[in-house]
Amino acid sequence: MAEPLRLLTVIGARPQIIKAAALSRAIRTRFAGRIVETLLHTGQHYDANMSQVFFDELGIPAADIQLGVGSGSHGAMTARMTEGIEQVLERKAHDAVVVYGDTNSTLAGALAASKLHVPVAHIEAGLRSFNKRMPEEVNRVLCDHASTWLFCPTDTAVRNLANEGISTHPGRADIDRPKVVQTGDVMYDNSQYFGELAKERSKILADLSIGVGEFVLVTVHRDNNTDDRKRLNAIYRTLLEVHTETGLAFVVPVHPRTRKMMDELMDPELLRSLRTAAGFHLIDPVGFFDMIALESASRLVVTDSGGVQKEAYFFDRPCVVLRAETEWVELVAHGQAVLADADPQRIRTAVDRFLGSGAPDCPAIFGDGHSAERICHELIETL
Image 1 (cartoon, rainbow, N blue to C red):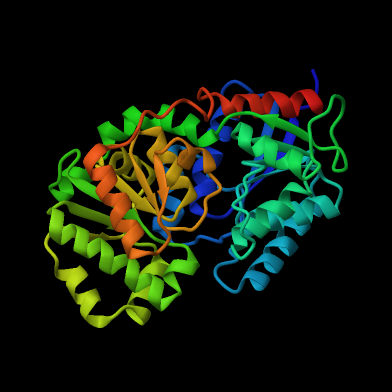
Image 2 (cartoon, rainbow, N blue to C red):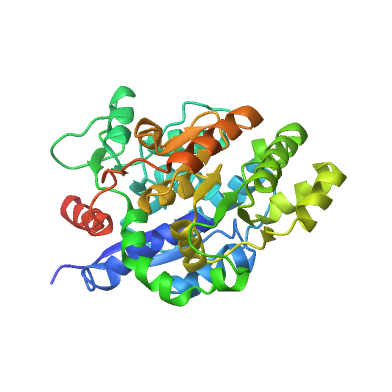
């Protein structure tokens, strides 16, 4: 019997933990005995509400290795992560390193592995916002160009790589001739697998005393929104106005850094109004089941998160994007999402449109719910 494929999976932030659940589930079931996974958590997200809760809910095995890096500047965090991952790879042989998405943990994993000549598999490759002022854009571009396998969630991602001179080819993959594969999206795998379970387990709608279609779900966490006084105030003032005029409840899971910046940068009177407005719920970050329940039951989603944009699409919910661009251009093309940035008039126009007409039909563009299995099969075949 052939030796099992040895993977080191690097995760560090909430979205990566959720994405890793799909791959780990496939490894433990269909590919048991053929793939052995070692899970390394960098500690980029260390708050229990942003990390441990997802391991507990999604049935992900506890991380085998904890780096405990914590917070810091981009350079300091990435350096500490890279050093820690490098030490792990030097102590024990792995056939490949798996990284997800576009965080500092992603970049650190790709840098450490590629410099030690360990092949890198980048899941969610090929995404582009075409705005390199976003640290996530820098991370994803650099990671793609250091990877051996580029697992793309959509056809658009494949085309983006081709435009950068990276296209698929037959034969064995290596860092100079990477393999590009359109696999679908592992997050769609999870939405299919956990969707019904979330309805059974989540009690958040009852806890907040709100019903299906009676509220707007909001998430704001990107630093260009949270760390800019003008943008932060413009976004929340506009949302409070919509809440007051429509009577719709608003549910706002507040990222720890966002809460800190609200205290530091938000107009005190606006902050008091948000905290005292009946039906405007500023709540702690929620687990995956609660988030799915909120997304699927909402009337409208307002967010600057790439992952939440997609999940809104999975559940046929319209989405107002608090950014000037998005890596998920398909959502805008289909009319399910509108780019409003932090502009009050654009936010209001998009909200009014969606509250009046809802979301258009959302065709299946993210696969069939078996993306993780395709990734595992590809790694076994090409290694």
